[in-house]
Length: 232
Image (tube, rainbow, N blue to C red; front, side, top):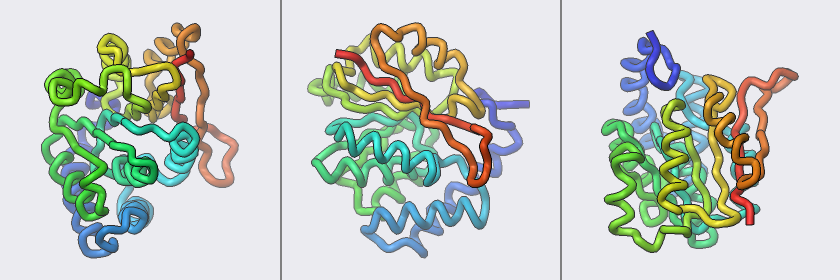
């Protein structure tokens, strides 16, 4: 049996057990107020204790470069799990006064992520919104009407079968502007072929680039982040 994301349903009780363990590891091992220390602690947990669903340092480093090039002031995230990417990318965009908004449907993930963001000293930059993007975005925009046409970057990393409908919702709400960057993780494994096809069908509107991930010492591409930029 698999979940909507393609992950074995057996992993879900384990995943739910691991999330508060990650929060505890951060609380006791990471320097409070130090975002890099928080990132390092979570990376260490994933490397030496148990693999968890985070972007990781290899793909994360590639996205870091994209963000430093485009310098988004307003960035959305769809799916935060334990807040690793919220801390990692929030710390970067804070350098130029950016704000990071992460939408997460799972209550436990929201609770854990908020604790980790607070420990990293990023509560003034990162906001975790409880709710699926499809249900939470319109009430959110009522309080942030200035976001229309002003979202500079979006990181999509939740249920793979929601990539296309949520991207279509982003487009229908006119959140993006020419130059906005949309990054979608795990498009090869577990895979989001419908999303790749959808974005390929809009090659007249978006540029497209695959940031490929290869394990150290391997020539095999095991995953990738699809990067699309809205054309002028």
